[in-house]
Each structure stands twice: as structure tokens, then as C-alpha cells.
View (cartoon, helix red, strand yellow):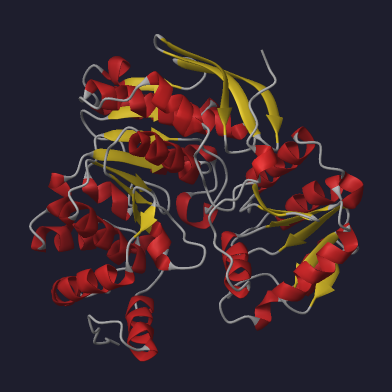
Amino acid sequence: MYYIILLKLSSPNQIQKYHQYLNSFPRFGSKDFLKLERIKLLLKKLGHPEKKLQGVQVAGTKGKGSVVAFLERILTESGYKVGSFYSPYLVDLTEEIRINGRPIAKEKMIKIINQLKPLVDEVEKEIGERITWFELVTTIAVVYFVESKVDVAIMEVGLGGRLDATTALGLGIKIITNVSYDHTGTLGKTITSIAREKAGIINNDDYVITSAKGKGLAIIKKRMAQGITNHNSRFQVVGKDIKYAVKKVDMAGTYINIDCLDEKYRTLRLSLIGRHQAENFACALGAVQVLRQKGFRISHPIIIKAAGRTEHQARFHPWKKNPLIILDGAHNLYSIKVLVVTLKDVKINPKTTVFVFGAKTTKKRIPEILRELADFSSKIIFPDVLKNPNLENFYSVEYLRKYCPKGKVAFSLPQSLVQAKKMAGRTGTVVICGSLYLIGELLSAEKGIRTKRRIDDNFEKKSLLN
């Protein structure tokens, strides 16, 4: 099914057609549906705009978005025009495509879609299958960044790496944050197979930064040795080449010492909360070193300033007060464990903490995830999201309660928040987690609420560490 898109957003009907057209593309098919053939042909028909971009591709199981956010802020504060591509969005698709932190205007997106539509039709006719939603959105980002003449593009991988649409762009700096279990039905059921997919983004003459460990790191090293000339000078490993130590974590941020080549930072405040953010920042700092080699001017004071001003939605995000409401996109076992560690680090009282949890059916380790949450606080609310048309393929509350009998059920997401606030009390804490889609739907339901990360004035304090 195809839809005609009108350039002017003069009526709600035209906006609806824009959404209908985008949603007509498959989000994801079978494992065999992952391939680069479609987007490469589309880029060829566009005259290869991707060749005009230089930048960074960010892969990994967790931490990708935070790395993109750190780099975006550092380069923006340095005076550059920075195109950033995030995945997924929370409330509106325009959040995924940004220049210097500002989402693409809907009018501009629709103009690019109109430009792409005849070429998309040609590609689909020649190949005999639909291009995917993610391939289309990636191409929109490329066209927008090239037309806007960005100085640098930072692209977050959507799924895996080797066959992800962002890999077709051939960006010369690659970051692989870490390797853990996620999307096992597509990427493989072992760390080794998942790591191979992520290491598949690496090509000849790339610069690579990684915070992977163990088997994941071994696979990445092997890939580097196979295809990169002088690979040792183009490869940075967090923990070896970039060393850091977490000094303190509180609601004001994360305080770290970090050494990268000859550059040292002491008691550096990261505005993003959680000791795991030190590793993400280290990856970003490694990319900064490479960008400097390529002629980018990025000063020590600017990095300090940017580290303390970086924002990233729904990653241990203090959203509201009285009670404190924290939004966190943790959805797999690894990220749930990180969430619990962060709650302990910032001294959240388990006795007055209530979780609101929902998860997509692709998450297979639900019993372990719920056990991690219940070990911190047994007060867990499951919103009945199956009644919400925007939250398809989520686990039923009956299934979740099977593994967490003490969990309470709310008939809707807004009702679950009301119920959680009542249980926590004004001095307690509500943590909404399990899925970025869940958080996005909550933000959409809250009139006038923006997804920009909010830090109250009393959080913006200088470190007391010496």
C-alpha cells in the first residue's frame, strides 16, 4: 500500500498521511531479511550522498545512545554542526534525526520523503521486496545531514551491526560499546555470534574504539587483525588504552578520573547518572582523539563543560519530584542489573521504591529480570498495556505475575503511575522501566511534558570531591 504525501502541513489529515506512509514499511522481517542490498541501491540512485559525510558509527548491546549524546554535546560545544541519528524515538520520529540536538522539522522530513518516494518505488520494483522502515529513516537522516552540510555525523546502529542500514554509510570511526545478550533470535544465542555481528561494522582503514570485554573483545580484536593495516595504531580499548575510575555517583551525576593518551581529567562530572556512564564517556573520548587527528579542534575545557551538560532521554532520568520519578529504558537483564546498581549508588530507599514495569515479548529472560527488581523492591506494578494499540507485542500482566505473584496490576499506563505514586508516598521513588516504548507512551499521555532530561537546580552542584 502506498500513500501520497503533501508537502504542507496545513491539516491533521495530511500529518496522518505522513504517518501512514512511514508505517506502511515493514519494521523488521525474518533474520534473512537483514541485508544491505536495498539501502545501497537507494543510496546509489540518490548519487551516493553518504560519501559526503564523515563521522562515527556506534554499535554495541548497551550504551550506544549515551555515547552518541556525549559526542553530540562535545562537538556542538566545540562549534561544529553535528548530525545525530538515534534509535528508537520516545514520542515522535523526528527525535531520531537531529542537528546540534534539535530534531528535524516535520515539514523538512516530509519534503525529503517526497524526494525519496519515487526512488524507493524503483528500488522495491528492481529488488522485488519492500525496503524496511529503518532503512528509509536512515536514508532520510543521510539526505538531511548532507543538505544541511553538517561537519560530522554520528549514527547509532539499530540492530546488530554487520547488516544494519547505518553500515552502508561507510563512516570511518567505529565504536562498539559492549557485547551482551539481546536480540538473540536474530544475532545468535552466544556472545561469540553476537560479537561477530557487531564487529561486522569494521572495514579497512577504520579507527575502532571498544569497551567490550572477554569473548566479545577477542572477536573484535580478531576482526581488526584480519582487515586493518597498522591496526594497533587504529584500535583503542577502554580499560587498556583509555583508563578510568569512578569516584562517586549521586543525583548530581557521575564523578570520574579518566586518562586517554596524554589527556587526564580528575573528578570530572558527567551529567548522566550511573557508573556505567563512565565507560560510555570513555568510548566517546576515544573517538574525540581520532577526530582531533582528522583536524577537529576540541579543547580540554570544552570537554569538561560538555560532559556536565550532556542530556539523554530515559536513561536514569529524574523526571519529577514528590515523589521522585525516574525513567529508565532498561529492558534486558544486563541493563536491569545496571539500573539496580545505580539505585543503590544514589542511595534510593528500597522500602519506599515502586517499579512500573512492562516488556516486549522479545525479552526471554523475564524471570531473571523480575527477580533482580524484586530483590531491590517487591513493589512492582504491571500496566495492562495490551489494551493500548501503540504497545503491541508486550507481555500480558498474567504472564508477568506468574513470575512475580506480588506484582500489582493497573488497567492503564497512566493509572499505573497514579497507583505507584500513592504507594511510594511524597518522599518515595517511582521507577518506570522495561521498555523505551513504554516510557514513550507515558510521555505522550502526559500533556505538555517534554522528553528533554530535567535536572533540578539543586542537582547542578559542583563536586565535593578533592
